[in-house]
Image 1 (cartoon, helix red, strand yellow):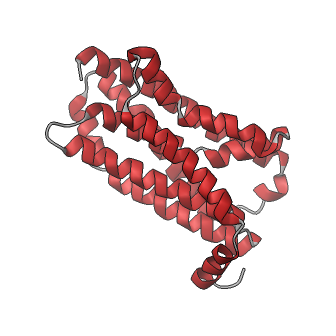
Image 2 (spheres, rainbow, N blue to C red; image 1 turned 180 degrees about the vertical axis):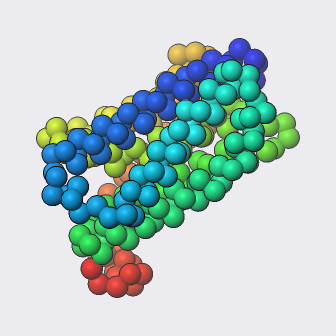
Image 3 (cartoon, rainbow, N blue to C red; image 1 turned 30 degrees about the horizontal axis):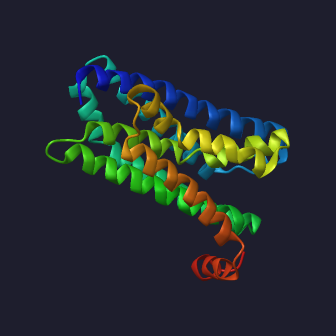
Length: 231
């Protein structure tokens, strides 16, 4: 990957990561503002989860900024600690799934969220493998890191859609746009789509479809009950 291509992708990564962060802030912020009774039910776990998520998006913004500024050594040093933050995202996400099920008897949201976390883990894990191989696949690494953030946005998009009264039908086009934005950038810049961008976008959409389908099955409710007891 050439120097110019690397820095062009880094600049796109910064802009896209900022857009993802704004989606999360606006989605959850507007939802809490519209439903203050739900905001009043938040516990310390919600705040810790929110801080970890914000830290992940800060990582997605800061790391390509360091590349764009030619601070590769600092970028690599911070990257060595990213597994700890990724583990926090996964542990916090699973804790929120459990909370949603036990407190609100919600089996729908956990079904979708489990695939969101699965995609996040896959994108991040493969991104690490891509950068540690010889020679490193920098393009795949950067795209997969971005997709790890994109994979986390559907809950915020769904809440914003609820606030706007447009439902799932209105949320799906936004999720599609987020999932395939890296592929769109590839097509616009190089007239071909990087496999990581295409497969990542497809995986995000497949996860949403699988989660929605699983949520309506009796066996999923049984799985949750076996894991955490009756809601």
